Image (tube, rainbow, N blue to C red; front, top):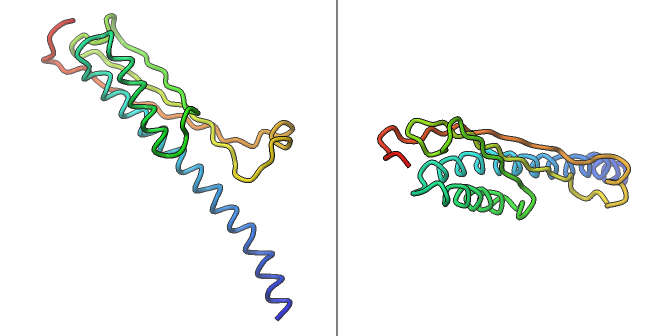
Length: 133
């Protein structure tokens, strides 16, 4: 009985940690893909060029917050033309987040990088029938 409990704990603790770490990385993956996609959609559907970047950042922040990465993600926006909302212009939105591995103390993070950087890009096209800005 003692050997069974000892081996059970010895094998179960790393397995539980692995599941926790993979779940957190998967949440980060969902966050960056959703943030990039929704930011692109919000950008190309904006009424004016002045509102587009703000809408894209707000959409990305909602996506990051949904997965528990409030204030940890960033968003880059690149346009193929100037102004960005020209009909049939392409807008690339790239979301970044760094996922820290769970249950690692801060002093260990200073010595060994125990974070997983994640990036996702989405290419959106401004509607062909949109009025010129």
